[in-house]
Length: 352
Image (tube, rainbow, N blue to C red; front, side, top):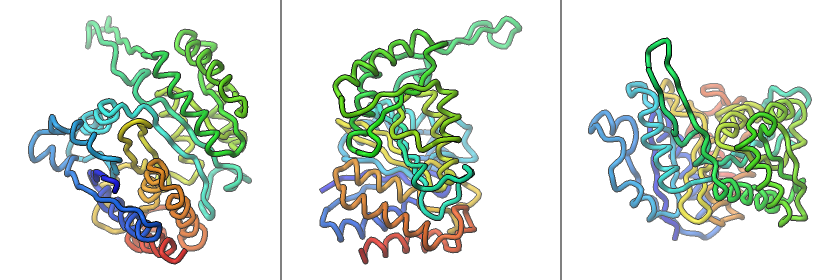
């Protein structure tokens, strides 16, 4: 019995999560596993109503679950950063979700801006360190608002944090069993302190995985090859900042935010899964938003929980929807409503 916390969140988040849960229910009946969900109203509306982003008990409460399924965070009436830092980053750091996992996979029928590239070429995973680097908030300002203002932002990298992220990437490459290659994305020629640590740890860990080929590319070269030769990549591992940037580039090459899913992973604890596209408030309640990213996030949740067969089946169902049914990934242009897309995926799972 899996216990899953559901945070629908803001905007279209609850709508796409509903479709993901629809597919989850069908998959559980099909494959014979059991689960229960508990809904949480954390998001912009709650903040505007109560003035509280999260209750003090939030972290302890979430530790009781096997996984968290998140819709979207971001409300037009709430100042940017309040919800993102107060919910997303707070949960990531509080639950030590030290891996941000972003598959970059082009599904059949989905358009990519990359010329002459297809699903066989765009199929890799980015493993991003998720709790260190520049995002820890270390630093400060001096003489703010004056011509002499100084701003310092420090990148914090620990041997423990770097090594566990790198080891996860090698395990991921072994599990994928595709090209069996891990590429470290860094900037060793300029960021000589942080990426000296990353590079040394990378090649030391690589010795434990003789079946996996270690590779290195500067971040600027990585972005070039992601566009020109994405087929060169199997698993990319990188720090928090570079990972944040290159995963959005990857999302565009796989068809946009409407199809991109991600996971905030603690392999020894509670992980959180979400679509990447944001809350899209202008589409709220219109039943036109694409739910496939949220369904893909649910698919990642199944895989992380160990329900491999169910995850594979949902992945095939998504490919069926993109390859055989949907006209476009864009909201309002799919040829189907949000709920109808969820029905398509669910029906494929039921009939498989």
